[in-house]
Amino acid sequence: MDLEEREVKNFSHVMGCLHRLNIVVDELATLYKVRQEKEWRFVSQHLFRIYHMGLMYIFILEYCKLLEGDDGRKTDHWGSLTKLNEKIKKVHPSYQNYNVVKTKIDELYNSNFHMKYIKTLRDSTFAHLDKKGDPFKVKSFDDSQFAIAKTHVKQMIEILNLCGQVYSSHYQIEFDDQSTERFINKYAELTETRDEIVNRMLNKLRTPKAI
Image (tube, rainbow, N blue to C red; front, side, top):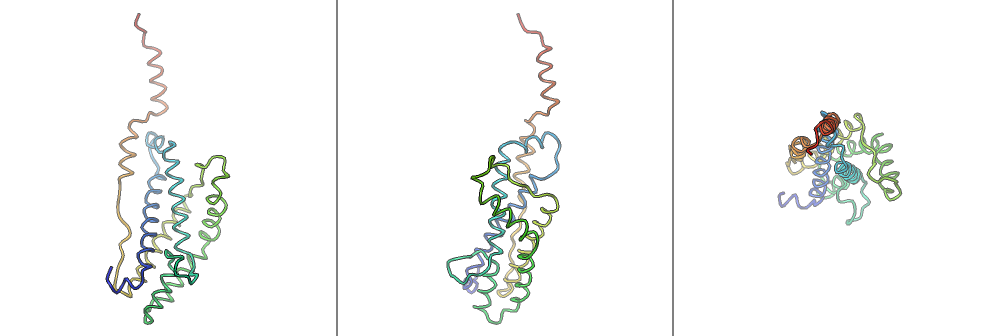
């Protein structure tokens, strides 16, 4: 980050939020992937239920943070795209992308996905996990919701790069990490299918006991 760019410190905070959000989307895509029985049974274990809960919690936290407004206070909403846009305009009066960025943020903020789904999920579920009978049974995205989630993350990254044009900067947020997929592939081999369990038990019953 250039010295001039450091005048708007919000960039690093927004980048951090988007980096975490993008990682979560990639990891959720790995968990939601259609799999053969061995891998499906492995991913259905308690370990991944905990992991899924954590991923959903982070997604909602970072997503809402990025779409927060600018309350005008220096100590709040550092990860807000709106606050970043307002700060750039204040520091650089010649900033040309202000209205374009504001319109794109408003579209995301007022979308049904944000207003009717994510905010509701945050307020009715994740804010009250202590009241849930089973805290690991958190709601998953269905296919259409997950497609929207991925699209919104891409649009947020595009907004960040529109902001960065004031410094002729481009931010690379996405990266390809297949470590979770490789972990699932490798250790799923140790998970027995129902047929394998039944056959093993039958073979055990058929095997004569040594006298």
